[in-house]
Structures are given as structure tokens and as C-alpha cells.
Length: 429
Image: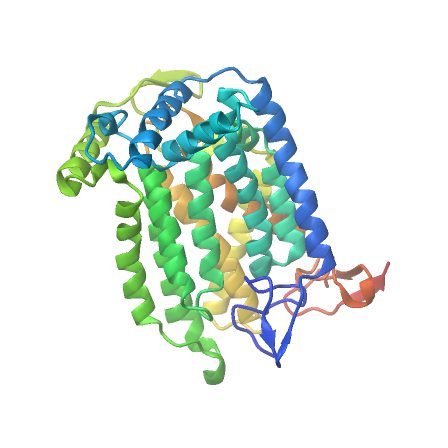
């Protein structure tokens, strides 16, 4: 049985909506269409409702003002104009999206209030983030886990709130989340490394902290190709895509440069100016209040406190269980313990590396002045939490929503083997 990246469970689907197989096109299963429609409504409606109710919040005035300045300058190709120096400490991509949305709203005779129009990009990207967790995540985990994770993000008050504001973070989070999820498909479709690099560049052009996803992306890629790939049968090993990797390393900064017109007149000097502001901000600190105390620098454990208080306890505790379970399974795999499938190891390592790398890298931010700084940690925590929860309740990944004969089939694991090499008893509902 093939045990590579792309087909480790019966209900896992490829990245694209169709895939050529023996000269025929495979359509999107009806259940996936229904789930995507349901997730769209579940994510979109609460974000729109909250965006209609909230007054303007702190930095929104700055970002909306920047968008209203930047977009006309870009529209008229006035590169180098003094207006580009407004709010130079943050890159301009999201502010350009805001400016475009406000401009389109004006062209259409203001069907939306200006504040709501400015929030539309965040609403769209927040919804896209939820859909991406399901559509791209199901390939590595199966429908059940991906759906639970997507629902967790769709209804999370934390994500709904910041998806309803004209802030930078949700757009940045969506870009880098999709970039990481594409890594699952990239070994068999190496051109996706370029797309992933483009998304990282766009994330960095939204907010500089997007670059903190890169170590985890490198780590999983190296782990798969150098530790998992050698254990695959020779005929199933993907080639080492050195050319695509080198191209991706080049494409990411070029994408960032292309999406940051504020630095086009003098890329090096203006980028250094922006970095120096961020560095000075980091050294001097910024007054923050967390866990009952105020300080200029947040402690490194602040991200854990934020995740515990801003996400459901069922998700965070399940994610902690998943981390322990996954680590044990990976250790057993490398000790050549019997009965551990390479497909399971790949799936576990994919999520575990994302979880640990994101939490570890974003814990380095010690000037956290709002919980939105840590939003990129929400997707891996949700996916890990869903995986842990499904493992605890003993559902075998990929079978709860089986499409065979349009039946729902539940497989109960042998509790003594924890689903690794046990026997299944099947009941069809």
C-alpha cells in the first residue's frame, strides 16, 4: 500500500479540485461541497455580525488612514511620494487591501459604511483561513480532524473578533497558514514550494512577524526528506527537489519586495529604516498588561497564557495531549518499534513540528501589546487539539465520514494498541 504523503486515508483528497487518474477526472465529493458551504456560513456570519457592531478599535484608524493614502498613490503609480512614509513601521499590503475595499465601496456609491468596508479584507481572509484548514488539512489528517479544527476556528471568539477588525494579523495568519499546509502536498507536486514561498512573502508584506513561520517550514521539509523518506520503499520516494527549494528561497523575498511599494524607491535603506524602528521598539519595550501585571516586556510564556485563555480548554488540553502522544510515537518510530505506519508518522510530525515551531518562535516576541500578535498559533493548536480529541475518543482517522455506499462508518480501535496495529470492529449507521 502506498504510504507517501498524498493518500494515507481513504477519505483524504488531493490539493486541487480535480486530479487526473487513468485519463479520467475525479470530481469533488458532495460531502466536501456541503462541508465547505457550511463552513463558509459558519465563519462568515459571526464575523459580519461582529464587524457591524464594533466601534473603531485602536490601530484601525492608523491602518484605514494608511489604506486611504496608499491606494490612490499606487493607483496613480506615484511611487516615492511622501505619503508612503505614513506608518512605515508596518509593511503596506493589508493597508492596500483596506484602501482598495474603501475605494470600491465609494465607486459603488457606499453600499457599506466606510468602517465596514475597511473590515471586509479581514472578514474575507478570516473566512478563507477556516476553509483552508479543512480543505488543505484533510489530506494530512482526514475529514473529521480537519473539520473539527475548522469549526474550532470558525466559532472561536478570539479569531472572530480580530477577523472583524481592520487589522493586519488575520491576513498575515491566513497567508502563512496556507503556506505551511501546502508543504504536505509539495513533495509530490514540488511546484507548490514556489506557491508556498509566494504566500510567505505576502505574509511578510502584511506583517513582518510572518517570517517566524519559516523555521518550522524548513524543519518539517528536512525531517520528511532526510528522516522519513529513506524509510519509504524506493519506488515511492519523491525526488529531492533541490531546484524548487532554491527557487523558493529566491521567490519569497522577491514576492515581499514586489508587494511592498513603500520601499521601492530605495529598498535597502527604507527596509533598514523600518527594521530599526522594530528593533528599537523591541529593545525599549512597550507597556503591556498580562496575567495581572504590567511591564515593558511580556514574558516568554505569555503565548501559552494567551492560548489557554483565548482558546477553548478542550482544544488546548487536547493539543497538549497530542504533543505528548505524537512525540512518543515519533520516538518509537525512530527506535524501529513494530506496527507504526509511516503515513501516521508523517501526519503526526507535520502537525507537531508546526505546533512547536510556531509556539516557540512567537514566544520570542516580548513586546506583545495585544493578543493578536499570537494569532498564527491558533491554526496549529486547533489542528493538534482536534487530532488529540479524536485520538482520545478512539476514532480511526479518515473513517468517520467515509463516502463508500454513502454510509457513515465508525471504526473503533483496539484500545490496547491505540489504533496503531489493532483490530477494527465496524458498524455502519
